[in-house]
Length: 168
Length: 268
Image 1 (spheres, each protein chain N blue to C red):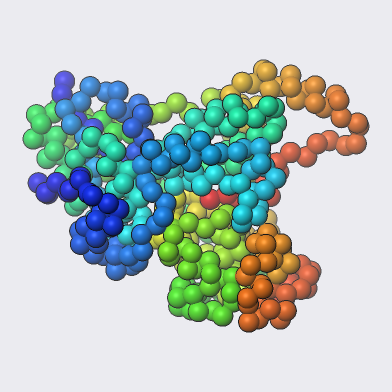
Image 2: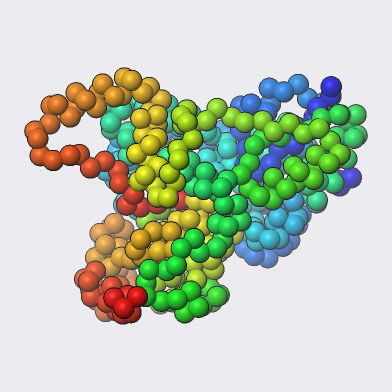
């Protein structure tokens, strides 16, 4: 089955899992409605554009759905593959393409390899649930922490990174 | 089918000129060229300079050892896991990278909330805890803030830096957000939209939910600061040249400023 890749602004990594799919071309669309709605200044367009210049991708502007569909048709593709995104406008575009095309949404390896944390009400709670997984080497880190705690004089519990400050 | 855009340029200047012509609406909003270059190659140069240990204790200073990877992370050019693994490889003890890794987790946290709430990240997630109602806040960003003409050396410098470079240090973002929402009593949405127009790392989730954290619509109390705090973490570079030095709106203790900004809070 012939596949084309649709790149979007959330995944411009040349090493993305998407690139490992056998494909007959890749396309990026500067979506005019999205640009207008978000009000991107030239700096934002340029940052994305410079990132695209390092990728083997056809760069277009206009309506994403129309352009991706005609790009796929031109190359005789039966499937469109893209990267996962949590942005609603990208998800809606995927759904619209799905009415006529087979669309595969490719995920990357997760940052936190752990069960979905149940409590997202505040970062501190989220962090308590995921911290053991955040260092990649969980059992080793646990042992290191226990050793550090044992070596510290008993002066109350260690307050780690509580949710003092968000970060852009 | 729309025409393919050009892929070959002799210089960044040539690219910028081409993009100005192809994207006139974006250029009309602001046509500055950021010194921050897109692409994986530029990201790898940043990765090579990363010092996660020093980051932990200098990150709140404007001249601190921040990584400036945010634009690359936002566009997926580098992954959080990749950055984390590299950070761990660069410290003797993983605990020295723990502050840095917690900040990567913030990004992951915001993305999970975005997946859950979608465009709901544009709505107040909770009521303001400032004593003011949502209707008490202005809808639009005041022009003097956008045009860097408030007269406050710090805020004007931050607005210019945002427009000219597409980047602000995290602490500067917090000061600006607090100024817009609490001192000028403007809805956080107006400031959030302004940031997203310009920040090369502008991500709707990280940006909006951080604005909500400052505003108190996604936290249990408003974030604000005083001049002493700004002076300390900026190395005094703005206060020294400010015409309002010594009597600006940020002068005073946290208790006094809190009473001034949120006089109705105790009644709320």
